[in-house]
Structure formats: structure tokens, C-alpha cells
Amino acid sequence: MRPVLRSIARRRLVAAAGAAVALPLAGVARAQAKFPCKIAHSEAIGSPLTLAFEKYTTLLRDRSGGRIEAQHFPASQLGSYTQLIEQSRIGTIQVTTGGPDTEEAVAPEIAVTGGAPGFIYRDEAHVDRILGGAIANDVSAIARAKTGVEFVAFGEVGFRHLLSKRPVAKLEDLKGLKIRTPELKVWVDFWRKLGANPTPLAYAEQYSALSTGVIDGLEADFFSISGFKWYEQAKNLTLSYHWFLPKAVRVNGKWLDGLPPDLQKVVRDTAKEVFAEQRAQNRAKANDALAALEKAGVNVIRLSDAEKQRWVTATQSLFDEFGAKSADTKAMIGKIQAARG
Image (tube, rainbow, N blue to C red; front, side):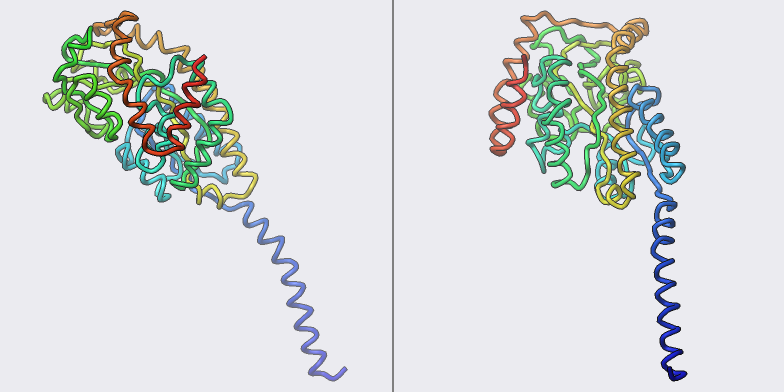
């Protein structure tokens, strides 16, 4: 073989050997790459949901061998609820939590699984029939397609109730009450039908709004009322059970797809494990949380069955109105109502 040809052949052999080595090395480098993961939400310090996210953060780091660099930012440290939802969609943060009702504008068919339009869930067993089976998988797939965020699991804050400065024991007591609502049309419509004066307001502004008189009340779960100390400004708690709020664990889809398959599995499986436990703990501690509020001087008002039915009847037309948003939304309402038991 002539010298020139031998030189070319040698270069090709070296290049091929280099490529053969580079491929597995690239795989090793990929496997050892670090993946920053900001977990941020607006839940109160010390609440069952926040404690679950603390555990989730630790397990993601441990089970990934440190490859997922998870950090936890509770209580709106990185933005308001609305801002965090948007950040999770664009990937500024990787994980947050929020009710499916947040998707009212883009995916009303999954918003109904988040409690909209009120009094849709009968009890916790009814919730489990919806979020523990095929419907939950459908909801996650729809969220992924329409928002770019995957619902990898569901936690919960439980049923929500009315906290107000003046006692509310019957429907007539709601007349003109300035009540804070989420910045969602369905909840404005809900409280308007009950005769209240709904006031959309950012989640983090509720304490100051109560103290200055911008609002007369708000609606929330026991843990949030306690954790954010809203009871310091409003001393009357009406047990209305009007809205059960599941909290989807929302993971940015592009970030999740960019993980190696083994880490994708860690993110999804760990979320299911941790938040199944969170839901059980949330229910076990709810009565204690209510008792603590009573001990702190909160006046707890329990509606009679007849009075509760008046509230349900007053808002019943919302099911038809909300269902009119799309055929899929109407069908989802039907599925949830059929599972009431």
C-alpha cells in the first residue's frame, strides 16, 4: 500500500475507534448530568401539602443519586399562585401545585375535576373514585396537551369553607359579603349566585385585604386558614363544604422529557407515593386543624342539611352553564356526577 493510502486508512481507523469510545462516554456523561429542579408553590408553611413537598424534594435528590438538584420554595417565595402556574408552563420553575380548576380558560373539561363549579363532589370517597382511576390519567394527558404541564400525581387540601368577619349561618347572611375569590370566572359566578359580592384577588394578598376591609371574608381549607393566620382578621368559620380542591403536582413537560428514562420514572413514581400518603395524612389531621382553630377563638358555624341544600340549589344552574363550554366539559361533569354513589 502506498504511503498516502496507508495514512488515510490509519486516520479512518483512529476516527472510527474514537467514535466507538465517544458513544458510551456520551451515555455515561448523560447519565451523570445534573438537572436543576425548582419546586415552588403558594401553600402555607407547615401544611400537610408543604410537608409532602419537603419530603418529595429530599427523595428526588436521594433516589436520583444527586442528579436531580431539587430545591423547595413554599409560601409564594418565588411568586404568586398565578405567577407560579405560568412559570411552570414556560419552565422557569420545574414543579408547582394547583387545582385543575386553574385551567378553566384553556381546558374546562379538566377544571371540573378541581371542584368547579362547586358542590360537585359529594364526599372524599367520591373524590377518590375520580382521581384514583382512568379519569385522572385522562386529566393529566389533557393538561399535557393543552398546557405543556404533566399532572404526575394529586395531593389535596380538602374541602373548603367560608371564613368571614360577620357570622354566616344562612343563605341570606351572604348578601353583599365581599368575599375573596380566585381569579377565575367560575368562582365569581358561584358566589354571585349565592348573593355575595365576589372580589377576585391574588392568593398572597388575603391577610392584608382582610385587615384593610378590601374583603369581608375568604374561602379556604382549615390548614391554610391556620397557616396564613387569616383567622386573626376574621373570626367566623362556616362549614360549607362547597369545594373539594385536589392539588395537581404539575411538572413542566419539556424538563421531564429531557431527563433520562430512569429519572423520569423517579419523578413520576415518587410523586405518586408521596402524595398518596399526603392525602391520607391531610384527612387524618383535618379534625385536629379545625379543633385548633376553635381553640384560637374562631366561631365555627355548622349548617343544617336543609340550609346546605339551599346553597346547593342556588348554584345548581352553574352545571349547565359550565357544561356549555364544550361537549367534553359536559361529558366530564356527567362522569363525575355518575360516580357520586
